[in-house]
Image (tube, rainbow, N blue to C red; front, side):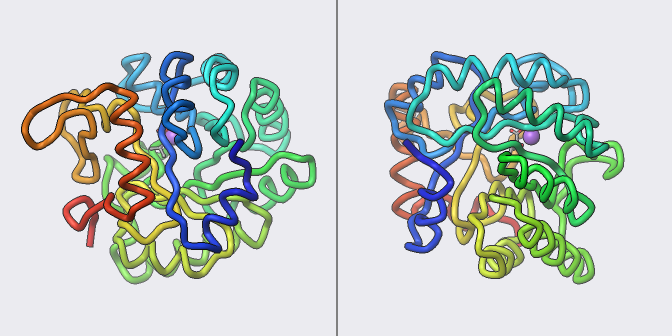
Amino acid sequence: MTTLSTLNNFKKNGTKFTCLTCYDAMFARMMDNAEIDSILIGDSLGMVVQGHSSTVPVTVADMAYHTANVARSNQHALIIADLPFMSYSTLEDAINNSRTLMQAGAHVVKLEGGAALCNIVSTLAKAGTPSCVHLGLTPQSVNVFGGYKVQGRAEDAAALLLQDAKAVAEAGAALLVLECVPAALAKAVTEAVAIPVIGIGAGADTDGQVLVMHDMLGLRHGRVPRFVHDFLTDDNNRERSIEGAFRLYQEQVRAGEFPRAEHQFD
Ligand code: KIV
Ligand code: NA
């Protein structure tokens, strides 16, 4: 069984680890067999499962339902569940909604934001709930950003992100997710904090990697972000099994073969 101490040891030893999003039992079992290190029940389910155009419509009840389906079907992975849009705007909401997700089977709850989350992060930690803070491109704020764009490119934005990362780590966050930030910034953040950092579109130097499962199986609609790689179909257009694709992802991340330069932002 993978725990936070497993991931902390991975970081200390320089062992790269995997995370995949997952929303249901069948895929959770396949990820169990493929020994994927951690699973994220992402609010991306709003898009890939529910057909919405953003993660904003997803509710705590939706997250709890999918978390329970995944958690009962996977014994190997550390289970991380997203607190959805506006479900942690107050300390009280953060506590109540984290309880719901933890009791549905999560081991860690994930929140989007920066240093403003410090009080919530430390309160949750004291109450026995580890948190993962998602920085960089935070999709719940798509209406603030005005689209999905690479974050932290300007010097002041990069400095702010680094400050945010240090602040939430200091407050007791257990993990960080960095989404769509320049590889050099992701490397600097990963070196600056003692906690494991998981990247998506953040280059090869974070401690772990995460992808949306549908993306890495080549199931696509619309524009495919550059950090996505299809692990199901090989260069000769031959398909392997879905479990084989999960295994290949696990192997390639461990071996430092994924992500490659073409998947990162500068
Ligand atoms: O919801 C999600 O899938 C995520 C990952 C992209 C990190 O938050
Ligand atoms: Na998410």
